[in-house]
Image (cartoon, rainbow, N blue to C red; front, side):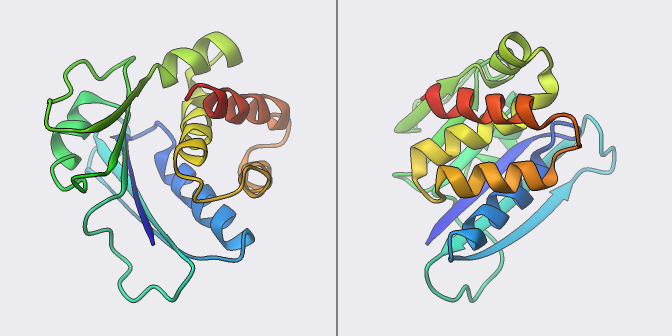
Length: 173
């Protein structure tokens, strides 16, 4: 079983990213559940999306201790990072996350938002870049299933840029 927490601020597309990740897992023939929460301010406040992926039935739909935590902002890391498993993977967007406590053992600092801005032309694609990174680091979903799930969810006319964003994230690791 793989427990994933995607965290950042409202408006970064992390709820959508969680839905896409869960749909990719289901397309791969796995069980998946996705849940989300965000602060009352919605855009700009803290938000998180959680996904559990398993080959077996999932008995409890909430992430207790993530195997992977994505922190897109410093606030998200500070708020949601405490229960990452001891051997868990921490992915930080070092465009915004400047201080990573030494307690984390497996840290991948990737300029996710900067890559989205520079390679795709807009920060809007950062959530898809992050999904590519997660797929590469965990192997929890196949790249073809993830790409298909992305293409099924993104607005018409943005498919090629989202495919590029996914590939950029996958290669950034």
